[in-house]
Length: 534
Image 1 (cartoon, helix red, strand yellow):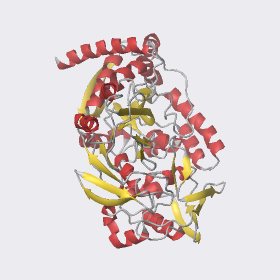
Image 2: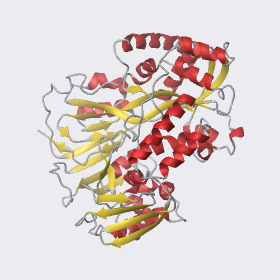
Image 3: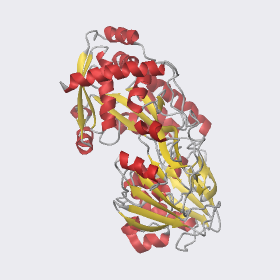
Image 4: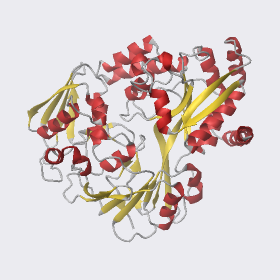
């Protein structure tokens, strides 16, 4: 009875969503679509201490041992890397004032800024960089992010403020890897003093200094009065409060118990923006959502079936029903704000075309399959929508929603493609380096990316694509890499190992006296230039 009811409900929702999207192009909502945010009198802020409510607790303050974006958001208030990302995920200098590479993409040289010290007084220099990268590349390391730096052969101190990183093989995406928050610098003195416990004692060069952390309750940082890049920041302290319950987070912002919250659940945005001094911001992210199809299993080994599935899903309705309009259709394997993105054409909603392709493939009467995904409410909503859409071309989808640990075991606890039970999988991915390489290679990079080694749940293995991905990593020439990734995206789009669904928005809310904070497209928070305006 439950499945029947859900089917009927989603049919109604889809019809409603189609009515809405008929008035627009189906793109994401913009944060200036309404004047509600801007026509408010600035509310009064007492003091200069800021509270930020977030959706989960933090795992560690060691960037080299971190695997979640939220923990990185907090770390970035205290720690910095040689390079980083701007608001558009473009690489910019930070602790390094300039950088260069050889043509073969095997040597990367960084000229460091002078006069910078860590919070404990330790000088930032080439030796400090070497200590950090040697720690990350130690063959005995158990740090989670060591794999990001496995291609580093040696870090050489050229002089006090020049460091050269030598790779064991060409890797054209290395600069973006250094911009990843996992490459942020920790004080060598803190590493020596605390060892593995440096995760509880982060010491960096950033605008805020670690004060205290009570897991599950709060983490507080205080203003670094000696910050090397001070811009008149008026905030004395920031307290991060883990607040998993959506309603509680919203209530805290409304009551003024939090000055900023993120994310804002999309279903609550319209009810709070423009009220009680609240501004809600949303911008396109680089997080893509997709339906992967096991291309090694029938009937998904037939490209016509995979293309039919793409045509059978109304992406605008998906965005309206599942994401409340706060997303855009995915028009490649990576999002527009990812480096070397190339928009593709086709797969607009076309049921007749989908049915024709199914008939050509010998499946006019459809087939039965199973869709895996997590048991999160948003994922369930998405999978039930996909179930309803594919029923229109006679594909009967059985949904299996699982707790995250169980799902991970079923996907990654396999040694060969033949052992894999997976047929369809609904998931999302954010390339945290901001580069096409990390947006494509772990997910669709051939046999080397099959589970359990990586995340290729489509078991997609196109030799031409594999060769092109390899070619793109053998050069540091951005122009050449860009040309190669255009071809990669074209071929993957045509092969359709995924149903390409959506690029979601980042959403966060804050009181209107708070300026300068923003969420990057990868979903991480930046408060370097946060100010209080009265």
